Image 1 (cartoon, rainbow, N blue to C red):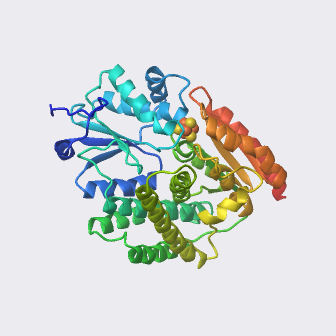
Image 2: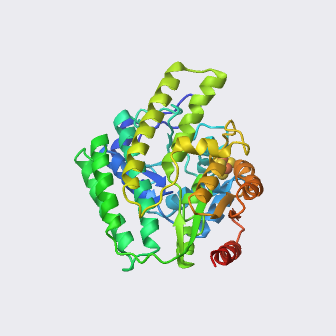
Image 3: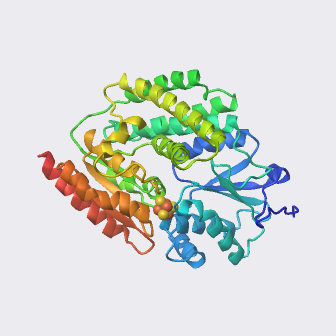
Amino acid sequence: MTKLKRAKNGRIIFTKEMKKDYTILVPDMLPIHFEIMKYVFLNEGYKMELLRTAKPEIKQLGLRYVHNDTCYPALLVIGQFLDALESGNYDVNKTALMIMQSGGGCRASNYIHLLRKALEKAGYGQIPVISFNLSGMELNSGFALTVPIVRRCTAAVIYGDLLMLLSNQTRAYEVNNGDSARMIEHWVREITEQFKRSKGFSFKNMKENFEKIIASFASIPINKVPKVKVGIVGEIYVKYASFANNNLEDFLHEQDCEVMVPGLLGFLMFKVDARIQDVHLYGGSKIKLGIATLLLNYFKKVEKAFMDCVDRYPVFTQLSSYEDTKPLVEGLIGIGNRMGEGWFLPAEMIELVKHGYENIVCTQPFGCLPTHVCGKGMIHKIKEMYPRANIVPIDYDPGATKVNQENRIKLMLSVAREAMV
Ligand code: SF4
């Protein structure tokens, strides 16, 4: 067994030696984005696997090792890790886990400590846990988010957002069942191949790829009949991870709806922007301010290139740029409200309404105060401001039944269908 090195607080450091032969397990959240991102790390010499397990027992395992008032995403992710370790598919002396740490005030910064506690309790105290964060927390000699990795991961996020945006708009109307899914597979393969050749992530390459990707989706034969258009918002993990939201996107497609899921880039911009505002308001490192400003400006530049390309194809709808979302919440919630999804969550609801996706499912995980304040808490006021808004908050927790959730959504859809007539 590899000799374990510990940091001052006792956590196990993921070392350079571990990089060679440890497999890093990562819980999947967005299948397109994370699949491309995985290749960024494989190309850098890491061994990485995405966890896509979705058995109901995972929830029970999470409940056994995490206190039951912990928010639902933590419970699921920790349960999924433990299930993988118990599966016998991995050498538990050559496995590391990776988890996001947001660095913000809500519990997403503390999942990592809950996970380590659960590992100790379950007898896996030797397993190193790597924090994935952009705030410089918990450094490891064998893992670093270098500038090249951040650039490639940013490209992975943008490609993921673009493929998700386009495929959702073709999938609902495609003449040949499966065309959109096949097109996603093609582009994920193509982009990861480009990454292997150190291509596909420069600004120039991305612009070229954007054009080709949009043109290819525009060529999919569709039959654009009127359909109920539904947007999905909410806490980031439950909003995106099908395991957490009981396959919400698939369910809505089965109900013959067109689905719009706002992309990940906007959320990342919101988080980076929050770091900048913190330094302006409360002071802090000028270096961190400089890095955050550079990153935000880079995100804005790529977002503009992406949006300009989509604009050339009127067949596709896209939501607002990050900067254009801020004024949407004036009179509703202050932009100093930054816990969890903060002001950005009601902003996403409003931009969906303004772009014709008036029917919205707001995913609410159990134990999440930020989403209850900024999601559920905003719905009444948004409906007052936009009377056509038809928003349903759906709770996700280990005890909630899929049938109950789907019945509530069906009720929202029946209101939407009446409004279409
Ligand atoms: S946003 Fe909510 S669910 Fe997500 S980590 Fe924070 S408290 Fe938990």
